[in-house]
Image (tube, rainbow, N blue to C red; front, top):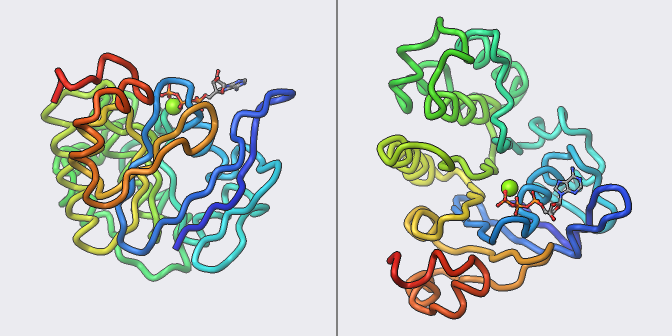
Length: 243
Ligand SMILES: Nc1ncnc2c1ncn2[C@@H]1O[C@H](COP(=O)(O)OP(=O)(O)OP(=O)(O)O)[C@@H](O)[C@H]1O
Ligand SMILES: [Mg+2]
């Protein structure tokens, strides 16, 4: 489904991503974890095409999309939920969703406005409300709704749970579970490994712009129990005491 090989990117004279390799299959929910500054968002922005790849390639569904401009990547089946959510604050929820729906035109429609309202009832109740008047959790749900309305094969989400109340995080994770059951491929960027381990079946661990470690399917418990590994890659605050 998504295959990333030797991907390099950076800002100005700075090289941040130093040869990233990833493989995500259809229907897989894969975590991307790592400490602050590891390069997770830089990778998400490069996958989205917002930051140019300086080397390497990104293939989606067998097509090379490395040089495809960002607004055309949804046509290849890629949708990205950015860290800043990228909503039009002065437009209503409905308007935000309809605009996203247009980007997915031409792809077989799986997600409708009704389906989004069903997945996220709080969004369904606010269709006529301006986005900048929503809570952070509601805005995150609209952002995910926008991604789904592009009718993607794979969704990349950059820390969707950050800063949200536990109840909202649970609602979002429940939706990810439903999407996964429907065969959607998802990359979940997450700093909190308790959340990552509950929502994904395997994960890549990033450190200083590289994939430093892989957690294969079924190995989350083993990784979490290894205090040295956890603190090396994610910081001491997520040591065994938190599990
Ligand atoms: N616009 C930019 N210009 C220059 N350097 C940047 C820019 N954005 C990020 N960086 C640097 O790139 C590195 C990786 O940052 P990035 O935001 O990708 O990390 P991250 O893993 O997403 O961290 P976090 O968990 O805090 O979101 C950091 O050293 C950061 O300072
Ligand atoms: Mg980030």
